Image 1 (cartoon, rainbow, N blue to C red):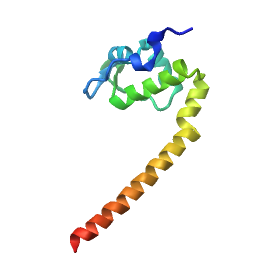
Image 2: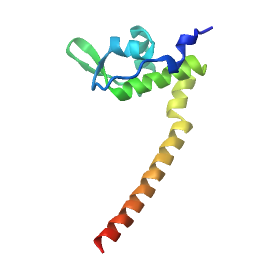
Image 3: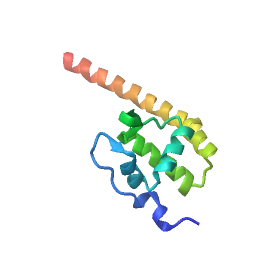
Image 4: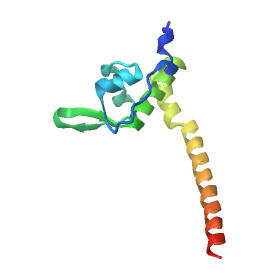
Length: 119
């Protein structure tokens, strides 16, 4: 059974930095570095930048993705395959379609405002 501290709500806030080392991400997400390296192989969405000496540098969106993966695996009980499917499957496509629809609607409204301002 998982401890209460494994809850995503107990994780620290993500600082306003551009890049994070694997050690920092490990602390921010409550996951050991070797687990992060394993998840990089399992989840195509995780692609940290690699620099000198193959050092990994994660960006904010990587940290958010890791927290989402952690939640799916540890809090919601998904398997790795199930979490992978959840992230890239129908749920993700529906969210993307909805985002595109909202963007199109917003663009149409902005174009109407622009036409009004041009008068």
